Length: 121
Image (cartoon, rainbow, N blue to C red; front, side):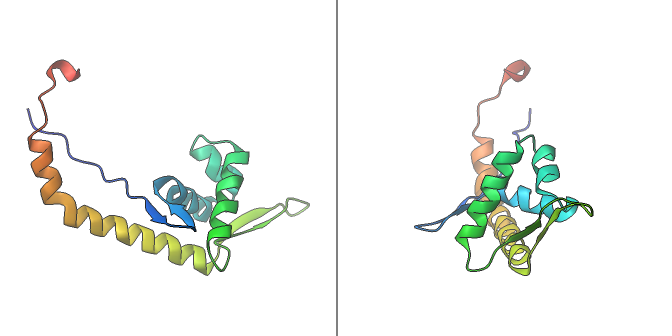
């Protein structure tokens, strides 16, 4: 039986400024894809309130907002990533890719030492 591949879940912690990890990054990506904070949150199984809270947290972390939103109305509302938001998301994904590349060998060695689990238990 082969060892399961390791998954990297990188969280960048900026002391005194907050953090960004896989959840916030996924939310930014889904906002970029859908143009909606509500739709992005729904796609992740999170409440609208929670999605908004995360967006507000992210916007407060950076000198410039990462997400801009417009209220609903006759033409509808929406949200979009700002240039800063796209840059933050791209840099985070680049860091994840670098960590996966650099950590693949050690992670494989650790995975090779895992106990075999009979019948998936």
